Image 1 (cartoon, rainbow, N blue to C red):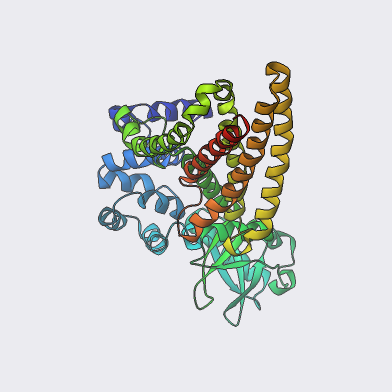
Image 2: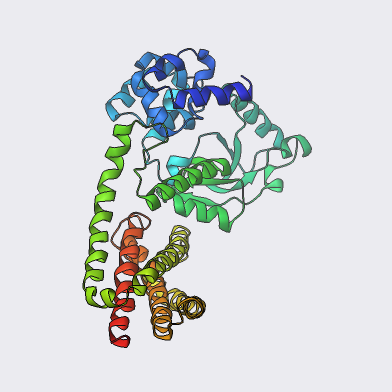
Length: 417
């Protein structure tokens, strides 16, 4: 199937609505699995839920075990077990192994395309095992080398063609990193970053080999995490997509908007406390959005850096002090720069020195607040076992709005009497 044809088909599937199943079944049977893997998880679930078990079996029987497992895990557990029983024997065994692990762990990312060989074996012996696996599965295996039943490295596949057939494979051994099967995905990503390599071996509690993770498996997981983080930042449900109905979109968003409404009233109440000074100095109301807007933007910048740092394991609550100091100092300096700039503009346009000074001080205060809360909020949420990106913006925006207005209007009340 040509690329343009595939792209058009995926587009149609995304927006087919109730006709999605009918459209999907028009795809040639041998192509359905590969098309299904290219649409979002939301669409995958919608299609799989509408199909009969026999139809799902015919689709995944053509896929690699790790791909088949990813699709099957979208379905309820009772359906998973029934469908797996109908797989081809080899796929059934592989999926049973992969399906027992949490998809968000190292074992959930691994595949079973590997062979185990002893360090004493010759190149020719390994080549035969390699060929058997390739003919049986249609996939090239990683060659993992053991000594005394423990992993000591791997043999690059190209050595089977370049090395002498009588060579001991230990002569061509390469190091390979390993990871515990229950390690979270961010630890897997950190390992790939720390030890640039195209694969990592997954071990069980007894240090026995369970599977292999390839770099493309990690990239796939990272793309999914990036989408989830973007949804979290926006307060959008992680299963929402551009193809959802109006009802689904409203259902996924209304709670978040109600919470935002509540915090907006809190900021409004703060402003209401200074009704008298606003009545006398209407010019203050003109510059209030600048205070709130700059604080919100600065807080989001800090939050983005912190969430990334937490995801990469660069910072936690115990090691936050150096970062907090740097972020706060950067916030104060940026506040000073922007405060002087906005004060100069006020002097040029309104010729009011007192309002200029009040606005400059409020700018410094609010960028300090943005840096402080932008650093601590995601760390506190992580400490409480919550996703550090989820809902963090609402707390930071509330802090910058309320404290920013409090500083701006409170100082104005003192200075402009």
